[in-house]
Image (cartoon, rainbow, N blue to C red):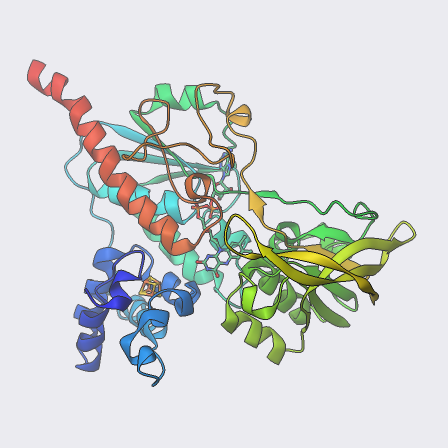
Length: 427
Ligand code: FAD
Ligand code: SF4
């Protein structure tokens, strides 16, 4: 298997569709790309290719620069939509069984598509007013135009999948009610609890969470009235913005702040450039757009009155490796500095919300990180309840959520086929 293909979580048939594309056989190339992915033009846009397929391209290894696999995949998908080659979902013969899916993100929507094709009735429940999960309310519009997500969602609904928007499991309906309603359940609720900053002043006005900032920005881009933009509380315009964190979410925040017309945008990260978790490409884009990175710098306190005015920061040094093998940042006591900041955005990562408490199901086991515990068939501790995407693997990537949706559909199908047998025998 070529390295690009083995490093693509979906094991897309990359060399084959690249060859078909080079030969001008675009429809066949798209069909092949769609065979392994429910969202090829979405992954083509937002996968961190430098860490996946393109980072493992043999041409890259030989020093000639990788084949631009993601761009080709995006082009194939967009072109297929334009030409009308994206086929509707064709449901298989009805099984008489139904599956409830909690979460309309990439994991939930992918599973829904495969399960519908297998002939099941599929209901997706999401607490948001729009389907798409972080594709809609997390990832900024300049990376992923929302119309690209909406047309996939429309195709899913046209295929007979029922999406119930504005339904929060745990508040509007319980998990046990859904288990009675459906023959199997897939939990794909993602991870949304932001890690908090624990320094003095972190509770001042103007210290906000990345997910709130990005959701407000995406809502505004979608044409919603956003009160927090009207009152300025989640808007970077004319502000001195400091984003704390070094992952992809931090990169999305700095680049969104630039687009909102911030007076200045700085990113504070406690490790160095080589040890940051975010994509190198994203950092390069942010620097081109005028973002200033302060490497080896960590917040000591947020200063000001009721509202944040400055971030007092420490210089850091890299110490001994931690349990993950990454060198642990330690405060360099010899130097500290202050940054003007009237909007401080915390992008320190995400953890699962407190499951099983919010579902009211004590039998649903979680591991030490709060993610759902699953067996080798992706089934949780509750029979017939499966899990995948970020809520099972921790904050990850869209392409891994799509992979989980594809895999779980197979496991659910096996489970439902076994459940079907007794009634078939009785008939
Ligand atoms: P989600 O996409 O989070 O969807 C979960 C859904 O479940 C949501 O719609 C939510 O409303 C719903 N839900 C949650 N709880 C309930 C409940 N109790 N009842 C009903 N519904 C519920 N990955 C990339 O590959 N490339 C990127 O560029 C990228 N950028 C990102 C930028 C940001 C700001 C963030 C936060 C993440 C980014 N990611 C990126 C990661 C990627 O978005 C996630 O890994 C992926 O969306 C996970 O998919 P999921 O289906 O598991 O969950
Ligand atoms: Fe590369 Fe992502 Fe497409 Fe796989 S899904 S080929 S990793 S861009």
